[in-house]
Length: 194
Image (cartoon, rainbow, N blue to C red; front, side):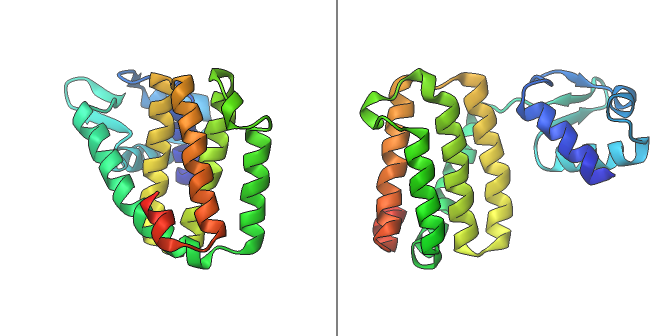
């Protein structure tokens, strides 16, 4: 029940149904999710531990926003860990997973990267998540994967709160395609560097 509560609350945060700074009422969550207070409290404790909410004796429980420093820290840690796991993914990823990534890339950007614009935001986010999840899984380190999954959620959440320019979507697709080519070539150094 606590896992169900955690998943439901986090989903609402990621979808911005609960906005940064918004106060969370335990009673409202009990009613909205149809769960008891105990699983809600357990879920809130885990969400606090994962950095999604804050608890203040004066103002209660509320959705956190990330400071500029926290955003930089997320980016730095993600860069460090993703570079590391990408090396292993280049060696360990199956041919089937590579084919699936290539097909997903072609579906996400069917008319080529040159024609990408702001209308491709959802396609980019979907492919970006799939791409990263596949690399994390292929690397084979579950502890690092758990950390990266939380960071990936934060990055996706930040993208939806701040928006992404058409140029960033285009360059994002290009970056992912270059990494995909390095994975297909089984080149760990290039994949990690990219």
